[in-house]
Length: 435
Image 1 (cartoon, one colour):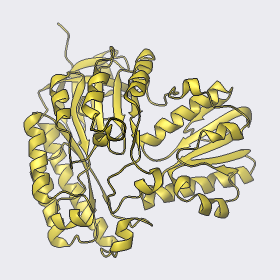
Image 2 (image 1 turned 90 degrees about the vertical axis):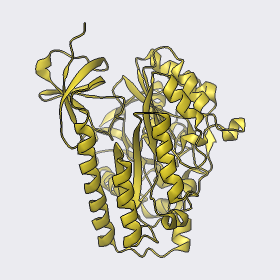
Image 3 (image 1 turned 60 degrees about the vertical axis):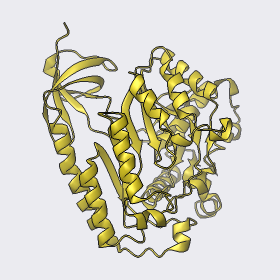
């Protein structure tokens, strides 16, 4: 173990990643050498940033903590700290059940870790970060919490009510990141469309995106995660008007059956959801829609699941993720409904739904053969350079593969790429010669 070294392991979503990046910077300002997600922990101090959203994520976090407790007992690390959503929600239980952890911190008081280590939190660098992503893109978190109160969701129990960051703070962070070489920005929050209501009395996401797009050096802006009810349609005006705002929207729809949506407390109907998707595509021709759906929620019988399959076939989402419902302690769904769909049925439905989407994705990708796409290069991998179009968010979406034989391509640079082939998800292309 090397003195003044810290290994940070981040589990869960990109919102957690932003917190880890801020912590890394604060530790570095206090003289620590920090590694993020190392293959093997070697530091004297290890910090785990946990996820507590659904059962699988909680299990992953617990298993990681227990594995590191074993490493501590074997003398492979000296101190172990846990932060994030899991410890925010189950602070008392974890304290009593896993005493090998030196200290638990929650989702928001992780800054106290510096004080516990005998160091100080540097407020003049509050939103300064050590990026763990490739230097040409970054995530920007514009809010915490959520006011939507969906029946299945534990996020409000963990993070509390929606709390927007001041617009000036966000724009200032973007300017700082541009100065460090960042070109592409993923705007994230549990629910971006609610941005500004608590600070300014109305939805201000469109104005925020407009101000970010005005920052010199911002090449791409991509939006995660929207909500269909009370959607701020002026956001689409910005998307149409600004060339650096990607025609991409990540909006979690969860289901289509009015019965299931009502049980979920989504405050939207089947008919309204169909109209919502139609309007998005009408107002922004060519928009890439990414969604997340859920199977197995209470009230989903065979008829409701068939409605969901029919909807996916109709909507032909460019990108889609799905997961099976798991009952979460303390949520309205856990109080009001019995988890009635058997686990094997949930898995069968999930597999069937994703098989439909895989076929759709293959068709959507094949339609791009022959087109020229602007592609940003992320990395070199084997015989290919790997990049993305404006319709592809890092980590979760398909990629564009360009043979290394095409010549030397620089990471973080944009190239016009002629698409020559496609599989179910990825595209293959050659660099179009510049005139």
